[in-house]
Length: 78
Image 1 (cartoon, rainbow, N blue to C red):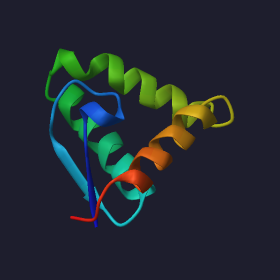
Image 2 (image 1 turned 180 degrees about the horizontal axis):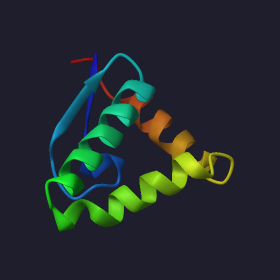
Image 3 (image 1 turned 90 degrees about the horizontal axis):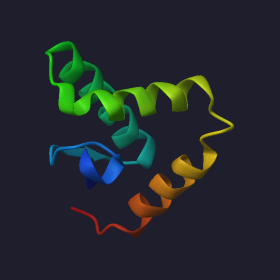
Image 4 (image 1 turned 120 degrees about the vertical axis):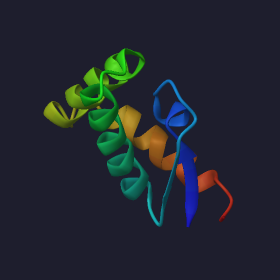
């Protein structure tokens, strides 16, 4: 299990996401951004729009995805 924050994944806060894989924390970040924006948190709107763009254009976003996976791989286990 490893931990990445919203900020490490491109967001504005330090909420921690834990997972067994980079995909686990990326999906947790996506849920967090959706919930934050839905609750009216405008600070999370740019990160939410970026994430939506990544889901819509996955080939174009491979660089971000590879970087997130690499950063996750380099983290120590919790």
